[in-house]
Length: 282
Image 1 (cartoon, one colour):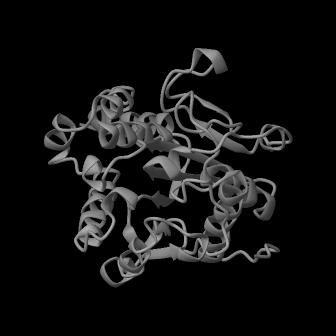
Image 2 (cartoon, one colour):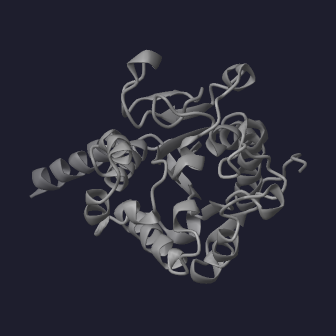
């Protein structure tokens, strides 16, 4: 009996060690559609002076950037797929590490699909959505093995061996404009993530960004009224304002400067939730 107990303890200790987490490695999940995957081209200023404390877990293989899916790299854009652009995640992470203690690292995982509805991330119903998606979208979805939600969870579980998930960043809604059920659908995805990753909702807030603001001529700006109701359904949800964030000529996507500002705002909110003061000005 004693040998069995000792063997069991050894197994538990070995298992705990193999899944040991760095409590000072803060991980954030990013998902959504084109404004989260990054529509604007990144510029030289975006690819230089990236603090190596800011990491990205490659969501797909990118041979041209010498990245392998499931491995960590310094978070130089692109943070989503190989041919995507600047995202709110870029300056979210940069701002986070600039305001956190020097021994804290930040990692992001970005699984996003341009043009998709929130239904794509519903693990129980995504297949019916994919079956009717246009071919150009199916091509992007296929890079996530046909199941972006499943891929996000798979990568997140891998990341949990290295660090601790501290929050979820969402930017989606353009393709669900005026859909009053959108908050309920987001709640389903959020709750699934909390359950599937064995997280505690009170410790993992959801930050949802507004679409291009009406003052900028946003063609989907009416959706912001619906996004504003999200905290009524999800107590841990917080809405990130897009007011003043500059956009592209299509009035649908932010431009590079807009992504930088929006990313900083995501970070400011997250830092405050984590109990840190920032020097960010808007």
